[in-house]
Length: 470
Image 1: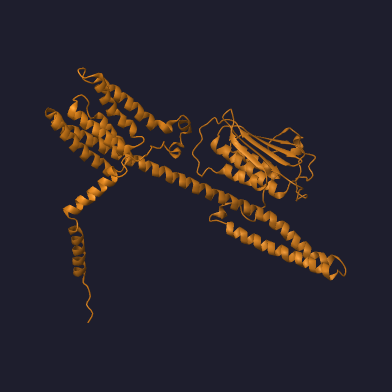
Image 2: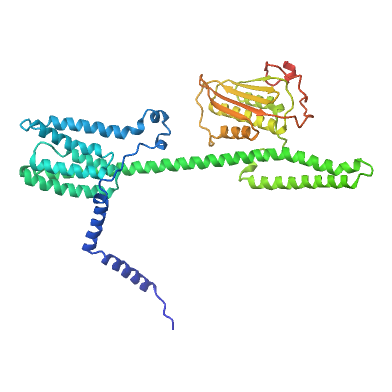
């Protein structure tokens, strides 16, 4: 019959395993582990070259002026200045009955390890410990401030157990040296040892706080990069959905015309009929591929954007957009130059979206400013310039990831154009873009098409038809 383990047996087995695990830790094994760590931390490669790196740029990304001013090297400067001050203090506190050469030697030997911490931290501690022990044996002048400073600096650069190991070894060595060279001063050793332990504990806490801040800064940088890439993908997906309607319209026209063309000719040749049938099949297949690509690019929350069945906006609706911004209290002036004409739908859509995003940014980040929108029609395309003056009121925090400029630049780059954005000298902000354009693909647009009746160089009053202000 098969035996089963009860809960009591399981608990007894667990306690037995735990007890046997602790029984393996004998005094000799603990001493072996302690010696192994001590040898690894303070003996092996004690003089290894480990220069102190400057403060990382990611820690100063919120203060770029400090980074440019050289604040990254501030810890090195502080250590060097402290070493110089300590050398002067040791020389000033030297016994005048001693030869100046000996006093100078002890002053330099006490402070040199402080500067060495920047390059060889563990070796600097050994050197400081040796010179301090020698001074306690032969020369009553120098104190232990240099050794304490070196231990604190090494602790800031090493793991916490190194501080414990240095404190134990330094207490033993300095205590023996003081008892052998100046027995009357031995009563000071416990007090100095306690003060040193407090300083080292503080250094361990500061190092932990500094490392935690560094990890937080790295995580924030990673999160910002991920958010930027996510926003970029969202903007590209939105552009793809908008252009899908434009391309799908043309492909549908091709398919319909190819299907109807053979019926417009009496007795069409067979080769012509087959060619039109092949054109229609290719157009239908292209439409299917477009829908498949759009499905790949679609992301969660896409329904929050414009309805897919709504007509895509173009520059003919620019006045409506501007009037909507004016209605919420932001004064906007529009100026059109050049001969207005219909542009390819993709260009018109991107131009409208760039102006829309620039006006949204001005509305959110520059309340009380004045905005000017310039649309320049040239032979090779259309130029856009949206500039706002300095805000006269404090901007309220607005939700979002702050990647609107990235989306505008993506739209311009997609069309082979250029976009530049940045602050102006008077405290405002400017967005300038150029979108190259070929022949128009919608000559029947309801704004008048060929566009010689547009304004030339004048400002257009908002809410009026362009021809009324010409």
